[in-house]
Image (cartoon, rainbow, N blue to C red; front, side, top):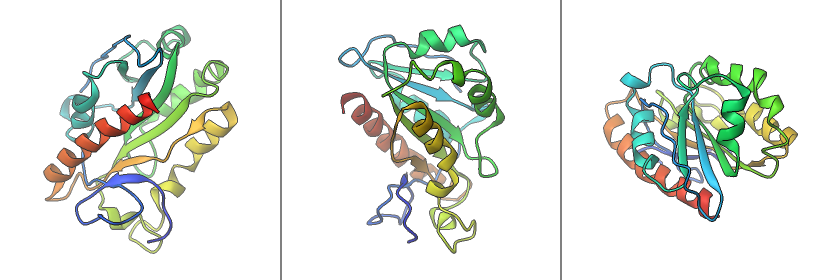
Length: 205
């Protein structure tokens, strides 16, 4: 298994070090200012077509009613530093959630990092950073020697560097695999349950 540590969900992945899923992918801004012990979890969703999402929509539905959880789609929220300065105020954890497109995130997350994040780094020092992705390909494709050659841990390294450079606390990535597979519905359902547990653990940890 090629030493990836990503938390992920997929059918048949039981027993591996990763926790994996096999998924696919709406969301309007869902803000809940109530916090866990004064610390909230901010999920920054980067999805250009959330209305037609399956996997990412299921993940959002699983956590949007949780106390202290705020979900904001970068494609829908006002693109200003003030918007995110207010959003991140008091956050104990930040989640970058997105469908994994061509070994990367949809472009709005890159734009957000390039144009807004550098002005927020002092605010997020010590805050946990989790990357949560959904993939069309199966779990085994993201192994060393697998069809895609590299593990998700390797492909998500730029976000770990971002966390290290800004003083955030990197968390093991979370993934739901196989959105395009016949077993997608089962994997998405299992992934949604595990995602809620992960967000709860982030908030209370």
